[in-house]
Figure 1 (cartoon, rainbow, N blue to C red):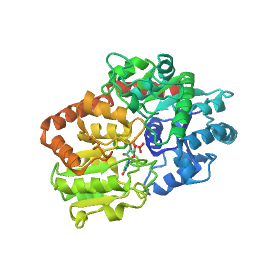
Figure 2 (figure 1 turned 135 degrees about the vertical axis):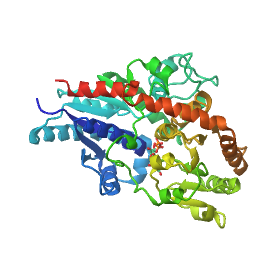
Figure 3 (figure 1 turned 90 degrees about the vertical axis):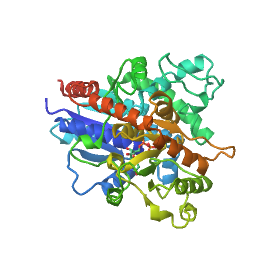
Figure 4 (figure 1 turned 30 degrees about the vertical axis):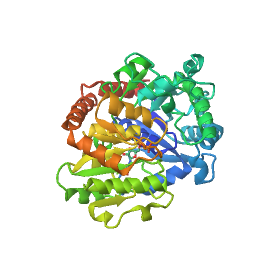
Length: 450
Ligand code: UDP
């Protein structure tokens, strides 16, 4: 038998591609050959954003996603439907062509947990099958409980909550507000139902996998991991832990913000970033700008061009940029690791959450949708390393609220102390002797086993 050869297939969104890339780089460093499969449009973006010095640890290839415009790709329901329709045949053709032409045939397939349909593509192949969850274990605990929540009358068959009482999957897991269930917090109702149906289907996919791993740690989520039994945490997966520093990003990182941070004293800068997907309406965007202005502190703010529907320029108060730096995409892990950063105003995406904890940065939570409210519960209620922003009566988070919460997280040393403690334990789990490190080694051994 030749060298172990993995095909890695992330769900085609930034927050899924980055951690799957981190995992793939870890496997490659451990002697496993990896073919990384992006959808065509993402593949082009990833290749264009690769730094020139990126080591060629993996082979990057692409398949069609069955969609032909950006709007459809941003529409979850359409995207999930199209992926289910075209990916099985696309992947089957890819695997056959690799096996016919390359010395190392594919021996293992790792798919994102949320892509059930493509398991069909490898039914006819003699392959090891693993699933990777790039989110919190608590998210999988929730989604794999969907059938039970329907049976218990907590939600209806479309996933709509039928009660207002908090949901607790096990006595030691965090409570969840039914209106904050991952599939309930989606912008449109049609998309919401489709996503819920897809989640229910995907539960079966997770069960079909022979190995289930997630980008988490026993330190962060003991109760959720206990609830799931079979999901092995191998995180945090961080770029700083590997050779090639950045790969898998859809935007070019702007490194000038690191030089800008170098000119600021320790713990003085507010870092503001909302990941790859969050949209802010113009009134909210304007209020955030005014809130940052009110704090009187320097800030580094990531403003993607597609974040505000082009309303950004009018929202900045005059002289605003004298105290702040605005970039379209930052080298986020390096920013969070910079001593000048005092706190992180975050949308609570799981990657951002884990990165902030891993760099010991307290958070001001601004969840937008999907699992971000669940992650906020961890940050605020469970780990107590951040604070929750509250909307006013007009549905907007006001400037005074933003100023007040930033001051709270910076003024009370307890947040920094707790996040440093959590950082130390979390990082210890991912190095030699730690539980995540051991799980990753076991996973590599399983992949390499004949
Ligand atoms: N990210 C980055 N630069 C930015 C903003 C985000 O590199 O300016 C990275 C961030 O480090 C994280 C990912 O993009 O790894 C975002 O994933 P997350 O789960 O936090 O949010 P999503 O984009 O899925 O909403």
